[in-house]
Structures are given as structure tokens and as C-alpha cells.
Image (cartoon, rainbow, N blue to C red; front, side, top):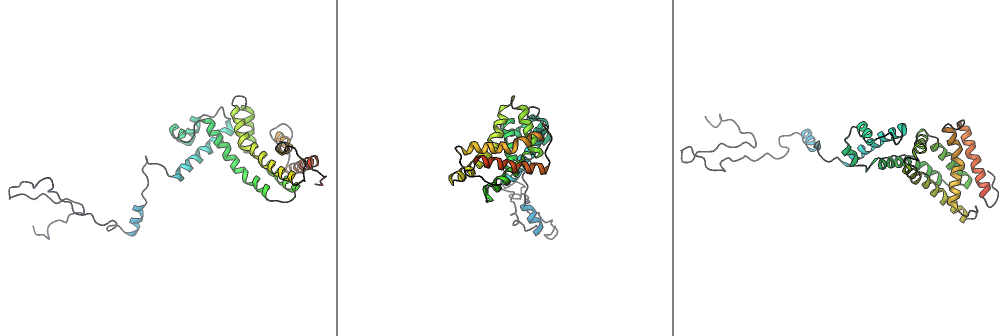
Length: 267
């Protein structure tokens, strides 16, 4: 067979062992010599090279940060629906894992237990509600206008379906699971009291209010604004329509300022 008739060797293929001294013996363990591999991309077009560069991780590989965040959000979405629909006691880790289509091992890699999961649900809800509340504090203007904006924002959140459902869960299960009320208070009410208390402290320092305990006054203000409309929305009375809610907020601010201001304030 001539050289032209011999089949071409594929890149990376082995040359056959050559006999030694014409006796058909092998030259030794290094008789198979591999041809050098072609430069990367030499046999690939531009499109194929780009595809080869995007190597997807194997199924058993470590998830990326984006994938881990998406998984956590998916767990929290499912947990929020289950907690608010069925309550804390009736929602199990198994139910959350099954609905999310993950293993319990995957769940416990992200949350210590059900209480930790509930805390994460509450924190995420409050993080979604907080920006508008904080914006009302920094918008500026006369104190009565700031408090009116805050009152309307608090009522907008407190009367939302998710906030009402969360309130029902805490009321129904606070005796069996007292940590629920603590979680909601620490991440929700306590933060509102702190922020409004700071506002009232500044107004007191400026001489526009006379308050001994701004933090106590802040909690009283929140209760004045939220308690009755929320109670009615929960079924203990006739729910307020939007016009009644706005009137309630205005009157609550009026009562609060007339009881605290160093001088009468017309609002």
C-alpha cells in the first residue's frame, strides 16, 4: 500500500507498534506514540467555540449564587402561601419541601427549622413593605403632613390581604407558638416604633412637641392609627372603605398632635 493509499490517522490516534529486528516483537511500553492534539478551536467554528465555552455545571455540581437565591425565593414563596393559608401549626417542613419539589436535606441546608423559615418569611414581607414607609419619613414637610403620610402608609400595609392573614396566624397560634409574636414584633412593629420615635425625638428637641418618652408616644400613635381599622377588617365590625380609612388617618393625627404639641396645631 502506498503512502497515498494509507488511511489518515485521526487527531490523537495511536501509531501501531513497529516490530523490532523484523521479528514482530514490540519495542516496549512506549511503543504507542500519540499524535499531538490540534490547537483548541482549530476544528471548531466561532459559534461552536462560544458554545463550548459555556459549560453547564453537572447535576451534582454546586449551584451558582443566582441559582441558590432563586431556590431560596422559591422556598419562601411556597412557605408564605402555606403559612398564611393554613397557619403555622398545620404547615410542616415536609409540606414545604414537597410543594417546592426539593429534598428535606436541601431545605435544612438553607433553614435551621420551621421557626427559622417563618422568620425568613416575615422578614421578606416586611422588607417589601418597608421602603414606602421609610420614604414617607424622609419626604419632609410639616410634622402633621409627615404623620398623615405615615398613617396612610401604615393603614395601606396593615389592611392588605397578606398583612391581615399574617395577623390572623399570629393571633390564632400565639399561645402554642409564642415565638411567632416575638418574630413579628421584632421585625415589624419594633422597627416602626423606632423610626417614628426618632422623628418624635427630633421634634421634641426642636421644641415643637413636649414628650417625656418619644418611643412610648410612637407606639401609641401606631395603635391609634391601625388598631380599629385593622380590627374591623378582621371581621370585628364593619370594614372601612377607602374614604373612611383616609378620614380615620387624618383624625388620628389630629388627636395625637393636639394631645402632644407644645402649642395648639390646626390640622
